[in-house]
Image (cartoon, rainbow, N blue to C red; front, side, top):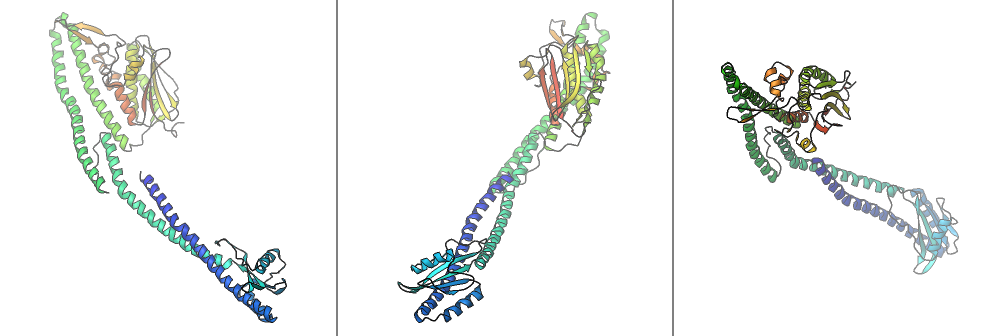
Length: 505
């Protein structure tokens, strides 16, 4: 904004200075040209008077001596003739027979005065011709032609123009300094306000905007500071509520699990299915709390990186792919899914941390294995797409409908499709239906496999937050998540991150 405002002001300054300087330059040139022409006209009058005396007395000695002294002094040639065009005086190499001189003599003998037209300029050079008749009234006794040099006059005009242009440059510099100061006075508070708005939009506490500039901006800054304080307090209270709630619920959840586990030996066999459903729901509740904390952390991180320069981090995508393949192959086998990956993936360096990319890969693999179905194939690979590093997870399962695809990254949204191992309905003693998450019982990510590879990710029990967390992690690093339908069936998830071109070998 400051550049645009300065450009407008400087354009106005240029136009204003040009509107002042151009007429002044033209006036100085015209004025000096007029001085030069008047001086030569005065000289012609002097020689016309001497020529008239010579014609009357027949003595040309005074005319000749004066003409020669003039030429020696000023270096300008003269021609004086009588009415029959016979030369009386020729000095400075000017001859009456020259075509240009002859035309001037003809005009003068017709009792016409001839002066050069047009104003001189600093680059003017050469000589100009003046002609004037000798005699009195309508009686013409001869003609005088003067070939005058424009060098001195052009030099004077150049000096005057230089002075005008120097003054104009000083005025332009002064106006530029004033324009920069004025725009800085107006724009600096706006830039501080814009930075604070960006911090507030990212969910971070904004810096207090100093009240400066015009009164309107000071009033705006004061109002923004009040609003920012209120919004920041509300956001912090919301963030603290999520964190505190999740944290405070862990102890009651742990106590509840201990008590439920303690009931197991005392329950009749008929209550086994209900007991299993209860423990499954406890697992889901714990995972939901973890997911909420992970999503809040990812959003906060995305906000920080949106307004600040994060550390210069890089990771080898191929190395992450190899580690994730090793960790998830046992999980895929237990779910009846075949996990494949390129044994020699191309070296690609992404601008993120290993942990962030691994967490994104966990989420995408978890969803693919969970929903692809038994007998499906899940492919994990990496590559480049222009300036992006791409980690891709593709499955040949049932996939999603176009409508479901548009909602896939929505928080708490889950597909209506069952997990790979199926979902079963269980009824308690009162006949109420309890939806049981089969993956929580198979060990893929639930209570039965707490020591497995999936224990480090919090997105495996269908909370509907996994893809939202992955998207926030990618957005934090300037990337994005793309979900498309695979051909002929299945789902293709691509995690795109900025690529370090210098890091790729």
